[in-house]
Length: 88
Image (cartoon, rainbow, N blue to C red; front, side):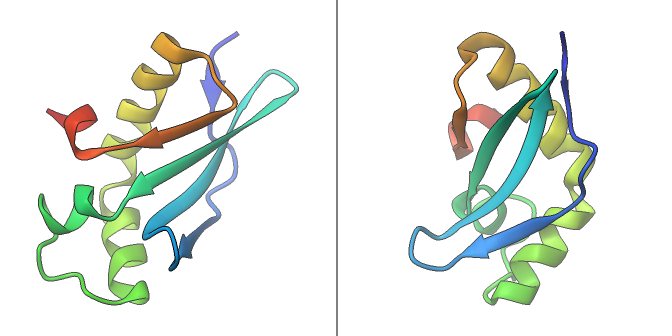
């Protein structure tokens, strides 16, 4: 079964400096975290606050989901941390 992202919810984890979001593979919940470097060293260098990070994530959601799907397809783990290198 393919990974799906039916829930648009996301949150910022200030301690880890990551945005967290969820995917679903059938009945299994898959946790994803996106390193803030993906945004600040890439398409959203001006994002410096939680609201800025979340707005950048929302604006880039389609591309992030595409990368998340690809990485999950190669790892099949229940926690996936997306790093800047995954987007190159």
